[in-house]
Structure formats: structure tokens, C-alpha cells
Length: 66
Image (cartoon, rainbow, N blue to C red):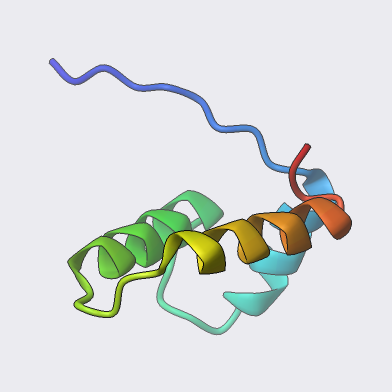
């Protein structure tokens, strides 16, 4: 039996994702996020630590992360 955890996302971000995937073949935001994460993990194009920090700062500035 698989165990699960919960990831909290701001409602505004979820609404943006829902709008973005409206015409896409994803049944939910959860499916889309899982797809994106798996795709990134399998990608040969890694994100450097500096790039990850920049992305995290941008997400914090937009209010998506604390």
C-alpha cells in the first residue's frame, strides 16, 4: 500500500494552473504537477543550484512560496 503526503499550494496558483490546463489532457492540477515533476526529473537538462535559488526567490516574490 502506498503512502501519500500533502503539498500545500496557494489557491491563486492552483487557479492559474487550472486555467492553464483547461484545454490539456490532465484531469486535475495534481496530475499536471506530477507530470511536470516527473518530466523534469527525467530530463538531462538539470537546473543548477544557482538557478534553483533564483526560481525559488521568484516564487517567493510572487507569493507562491514562503
